[in-house]
Image (cartoon, rainbow, N blue to C red; front, side):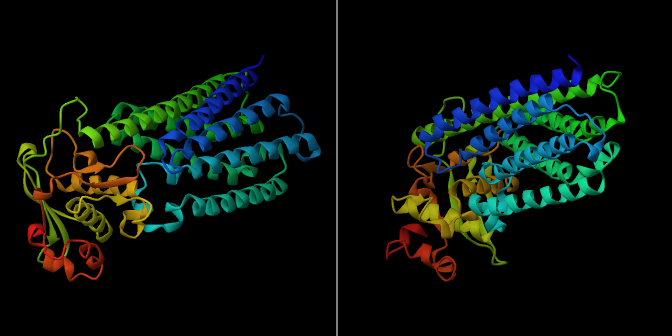
Length: 404
C-alpha cells in the first residue's frame, strides 16, 4: 500500500468513528436543555462523517488520467470538492453555537446570533463556492493546474478552519485551559499547511512516494489531533455546564469552597459623562470602588438582573430577549464577565460570572444578580429618566427607597 492510500484509509476510519461518537454525544447531552446550543456537536459529527466519505472516495477513485480527457477523473475531482465544501459549511454553521469567542458578533449581527439566519448566509456562500469551483475546473483543465481549479474551495475551507480554530482556542482559554488553546493553535497551523500542500501533491507537483511522505504524515497527525480536540471541547463544555449548575445552587468555587460575597457591593448608575457604569466594591477580592463602564445592552442586562434580584425573580432567557446582550442570556453572561474582567485590576483569578450571576437551576435559562438585595444600590432617579431603562425600573416597587 502506497503512502497516500494508507493515509486516506487511516483518516477514513478515524474520521468516521469520531463523527459517529460526536453524533451519539449530541443525542445523549440533549437532556441538558441548552435550547439547541448542543447542536454544534451534531454539525461537527456530520462534518467528520463527510470527511470519512471523502477519504473513502479518494481510496476508491485514485487520481489517474490526464485531466478533462478522463471524465471519471473529473467527476472524482469535483465530487471531492462538493464534499469538502459541504464539510466546511457544517463547520461554519457551528460558530453561533459556541459559548465563547464571538460575543461581539452576537451583539452586532442579528443574522449571526440566530443560527437559522446564519445558515441562510453559510449555505448560499457554499453554493457560490461550488459554482466558482465548477467554472475554474472548466477553465483550468490540465492536471498540473488542479490547485488553481480548486482555489475557491480551498479559500472557503481555510476560512472555515481558521474560524473554527479560533472558536476552539478562545473556548479553551476562557475555560482556563491555556495549554489546550496553544495546542489548538499549533494544530490549526498544521492544517493550513496541509490544506495548501496536499492539493499541490495531488496536482502532480510532487511524488508522495519519493520524499514527501511527511506531508501525508502531517495530514494524518493534524486531522487526528483535531478530532481529539473536538472531544476535549465536548468534555470541557459538559464540565462547564455542570459547574454552572453547582455554582448556581451552592455558589461553589472550583476548589469546593463557598464563594465569599458577603462584603461585595455594587452600584448601578451613570457617571458625569452620562455613560452607564457599575461601581463594584469587593474588599475580599481587593476591589475597592472600581468603576466599570458598560455598553447599553450589557448595562440593561445587569440592571434587569439586579431588579429581578430585588423582586425575588429571575431574568428569563426566552421572554426577556429585548434586554439581553445579543438577545441571548448565555451570551449576556459571558459578555458581562468579559467587560468586568477587562476593567478590574489584575486579580489572582479571573472573575467568573457565577460569582455574581446566579441561576435558578441547571438548564432553566433563568438568571439574576447573585449579591444580596442589601448589597445592590441603584441611582433610581437617573435610571428611571432613561427611556431605554424606564421599563426595567418600572418593575421596582412603588417605594424605591431601599433600592437607592
